Length: 335
Image 1: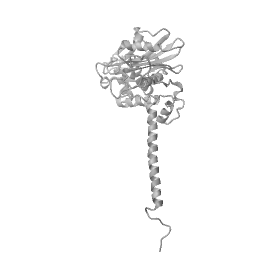
Image 2: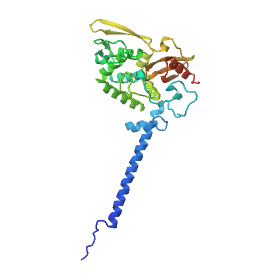
Image 3: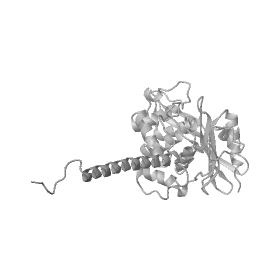
Image 4: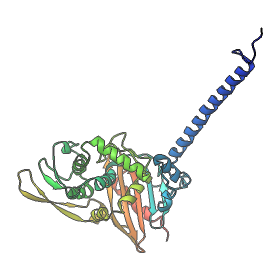
């Protein structure tokens, strides 16, 4: 007697079903690979006008349609004629949101102490600027040849004064003291720096310390430094520090005596060794110098009409050429 209503394994219907399932599985793999490549493309080109808002939106899964509305966006990365003698350079009119000039804006380079602008942002956001900080041996565990603010073990400073010591005389000891006070460890503070960088859209940056001493995993781009300085100059306290010629900090010495120290701004613009071209006023900035990074600076300026500019120069071969490059950038502006 024949059975009815059943199918044996291997019947045409079963084979067709298996083939259909296989086709769907292959299609799913191809789609996933395409989607991954699409996402990688966004992050490889994070600053192009058509990708910028979408890139940040994918990172944080928020609506950032207007992310680039208040930013200068570089759309032309073609080779420029007569480039400056530097690894990277740019000058942006941040009042009109105009990218006036850029050279190697997205190249990853070591920023040296220009790093400290990001350190300021993290300390200002997460630290208590009125807190008293007792200087420890761990805070002074740095290359003895690196720049310092003259801190000594047992000294007690107010956090806000350490900001002046960090930005005016590029004190690596001040930067490390604040990082360890705010975060507990260098690694945790670096994580906070990287988190802040991502928040600002500075996706070409990775920080491993608060001071900028050389490390292969510590890098940024000229464009990212524009983003970072652009955020910092929104804070009147930062602008006040970088525009201050001298600052006297009052602190308690290790023996309990009241002491004071005076720091002077370290740029050649502040000292009068170099002046900006006619029509421009340098508000202030942050320099950076190591054998790996060469001579670097991020600068905040204004013109006679009150328009504001951010300039960045990385990897100039000498200090003289650094300031030549910075002044040459002003010549790119046509009003």
